[in-house]
Length: 398
Image 1 (cartoon, rainbow, N blue to C red):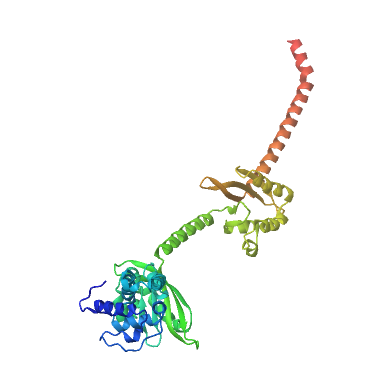
Image 2 (tube, helix red, strand yellow):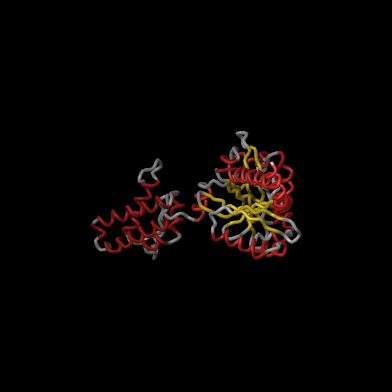
């Protein structure tokens, strides 16, 4: 700290030591050219340490405030150890205490330093643009990672980030750019990374206004959302496949959670029960049940069915439900699990009207056949009974 190629720090140290020995100093009179005015200052050194003119003194000598504080500390230590400082020992110790407190406060990062440290250590890209000149004031280093292009290229040409936008997104984004100068702007778009990979970006812009309300800068944050987009697209594909599977069956499917909220259903379910979309859109199975009760011939039995499902959630249930319009629906209700735990139920409704009527008809035919067979057996028994004497007489003759 005390060495310098031009001797500035060493020279300043000697002059500062002389000034401190008098216990008074005027920072305006301590100059690098060696000139000192004869007048003394009534500013005590401990006040100088806390005074804003500390920065002026450092600038006068072309050294940093940290270097100045170190010199001040070392000088005070020298005076404390010297014979001349006997009567000022307490005063100089106070100065050292003031210095240590000031040094701790001064060593704290400024808001600007904190902000720069933040934006230079996050994955998101931070931009700051001057509106009237279109000049790029600042872009964080993460731009080089996300875009695969240098920050300097953006300083040289603030519009160069647009060159990376995917051709299918370019016209759309270009059309929205004027809105940046009038308020908040938020867009999601694809870019072509310098590696050739496609990346999804989400950019938000915020206007920075003068006290008069005029927008003079645009602050923006860009985030690489490629992973989120890929996850969303994979989920969309899975849901689309699931919905296609649901719609491909002739059965009506209703998926419920444990609280009875409707998670999913297919169009066949809606058509089987003639439930309006306005009811199903509320995703409340209680409203759907209230609607279909008017269609069921024996509503109390259906309510008992629902109660049993909640009473025995782990069981597979089979029911036949007769409707007032002569249709018959078969209900197969089974639990669905996630990670081994029951999360709800899947209800499958099939229109078995034809099968039910055929079964009833077959049952009726069986009953008729049984009656016919019984009647014919009775008639045969009667005929045999009537023929019995003749048969006995013929046997006697023989």
